[in-house]
Length: 294
Image 1 (cartoon, one colour):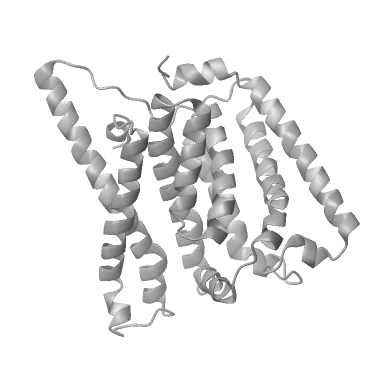
Image 2 (cartoon, one colour):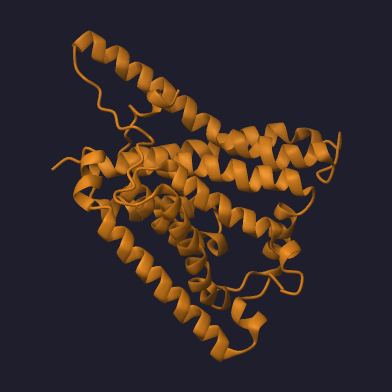
């Protein structure tokens, strides 16, 4: 199956068509699968309701673009046989860690992720969430912990990385410069969250995830990062009982000296990780992996 997707290398315009298909048809399909809840066959709080809203309706978001891609690839491959032309392909996953040991690399990006989370904390003060949105997010990560982890952490990490990095960014890296490709894929990643409070942080995460995918061509790296971030969000209330997760880190610490010290350390560590990865995974090798056009 992944081989078929490797033949699809979307341009920027085609990427937005995929987003449109996801949002329009995904919303319709999501509404249909949630009819039992709407008609009170079972409640949203029940196990069946949680599976429906957090897993089934979410997965249906990606059904239309996936079917569209499979149809398009089949058409292109059949046409190539008739015209004796070759259809370009770039594998979704072709890991290249340069001089890094794989375990060391995953540890580095794990640390880098949490540095980035700390560095984004000022955004919480700059863009405070309205109460209705905070309650919505609590509902999303509330309920049965196992269903929430499966839907919010596992399904979201796999599906969104497959869509935004494995399909869209991989195609954009074939048609655009690395910088433009990463920025556009991050914007698309932010846009599909459909709200500014998640969108701003999603854009910054998207830049980091996109850069990691560009450097390594390893989709599992970004799935790991996405899963880690979402998993932490799901269990934050349980592992940090004394911390008000609705507030920024600065408001929880209530000590500016400690707060800026933490941010300074995070910035220093993130910078070191960025420099080390850049040094030990050469861009020339990365471009070769993605068969970039000159």
